[in-house]
Length: 182
Image 1 (cartoon, rainbow, N blue to C red):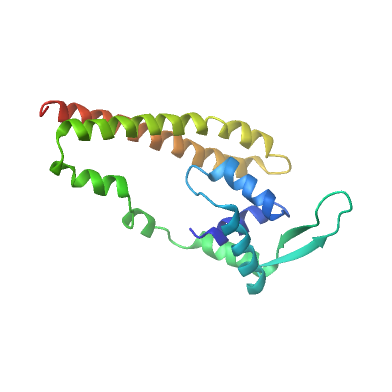
Image 2: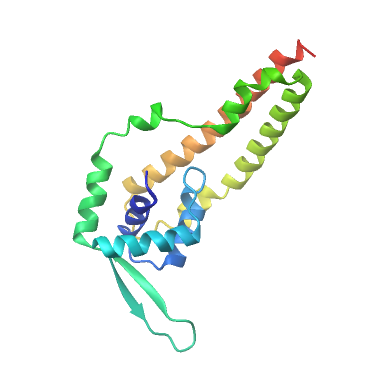
């Protein structure tokens, strides 16, 4: 997925500023798609040049001026085209630096690998704790969105919880196997 398609997806729900987009990325899909503010603004400029979004400049007297972005018809077409494309390449083209390091960890003592795996479990648990706000964020942002669309948000959150729990259980099994070699 490209950041630009994520932006188009959020704009398909309604008009937003770059700041709004950063907040919604952070509060809803951050567990599988991180987006830095600077990258969002760069992508918005590209999308505007491509004609996929339009920008309305809002002059404010009591606050800084802001830009409100709208998805255009060609932006909707691009977004729907992207949605309909086969995404099987995401299964086959997975890159994970942690697993690459683990693959070569036979060069270290098992105790060192166990320490790394325990830290991985701790990081996963902290991440899972941060994800606990997702159901509340889904509830807060559902105004005007049909229930069947909310179901997709809930399905991705369920994947996130399932995936992180799978990582924790896998790391525990790895530690058990390495304990024999201490």
